[in-house]
Image (tube, rainbow, N blue to C red):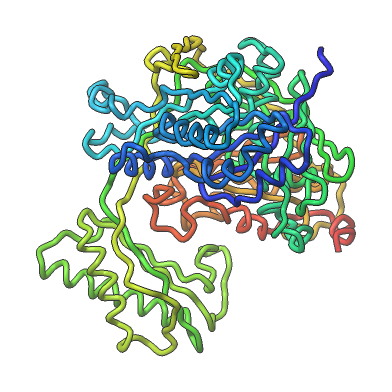
Length: 599
């Protein structure tokens, strides 16, 4: 095995990420690549609407005018290659904008684009083929409601562009980790059957894809990094030819790279950790080991892979009515009860107006009183709150109905219980609900191309094979010792780190034991039934629990728990970002001697 390593910096985790990453990473020196991830499902629909208004729009302009414009000369001088999915739904326009920068600066950089993910023009045929939603089984929506439809492409087309000499590779929708894996395939010459290496490179990409989340952002032990978050570091992966890698960050930057920060990011939104499906490999992260090898250096190894699937996941967004809402504040005695009465009255008034117009009722309404522990549901009892924010929201096929609710809520100001306040400008207006619809499409039905220097080359898809989930061998679960003596309860946060996020209408909660000795007690306490009860006020589906012995971790997948997820949801937290924080308050029974050591 080659001793070669490559250094890749992760400079963006979403469209709108901070602009400090690129100069920070270039200042670290010694990088071979900088990668940028800008895309989410809803981002694609926003870009699709922008392109519909202007043929030059539909890409992440931040990549061009924030990330590259001030750093392109330094990128060229250091010979750092750049890979980004900033192309969105218009990679060609994004490449043209970058090409203009390159020419204006007198630089000699080759720009390649990867296309083929955008299937919007085929929506009528796809609808006629009768595709069903891959999780719920729902029927394909009316084609004229579809806003975006994109296949999640893989890393091998990116590697092909690099093989052809591209300095900057711009893609449309690919899986987030592909921008990193593509560099690895090119540099190490990995073939499609080097499954463990592909899984390791994909994991490196997964660690990088959310930027500073691997360096202390959103970390459970946030106070360890709170003094430095304004200067937080962006991650660097030093990747070896066998797929193992070390995570670090630029010297002098803020934040922290530790087993805890990296483990939290590893479990972030992965679903079944033994069947993390990507276009190029099915990853198994259950035996991945994390080792602290010095200050802000964590070594990651042990990812394994199964053959790539025979389909691409396609994510489509479609319009499903309108939504709107606003947050009001109450303070003083019985603030929570006053807020609830105010919300009830606003919705009742609006419904009265709809009935008077012979209009349909709201499709859905939502009232959440933040400050009265509404996010905890029935899990905790709280005495009357004195200061709350009440969010009132609704969904309806007609945007005028949303306007009625907002007008009636505002109009209650002089009729409400005392203590109403708030900081606001103009009255909120209705916005389209864009609902996610995911389905699978055979790989041969997606035509991919790589274009550079005026030449476009078709990229041939590999066939892949279906995944047999039933054949996956699951690890033995941890068992507590039988002679632990007297037990006492401690909150889970004393024993574990946690990170949560979303995939459509699913929430993913990763829990990592701070010490391997804690894991049996955590496993015993957090059964699927217990977690389901904890989130019963949100949960409409099942809970799945998975064990990762390599990292002393547990991953939970909560189905149908986010009210539709994304902008289809009326929830205060439609992406489940705070769900781990809810679970970390749960009591866990541990031996009294262990509990005393935690004080």
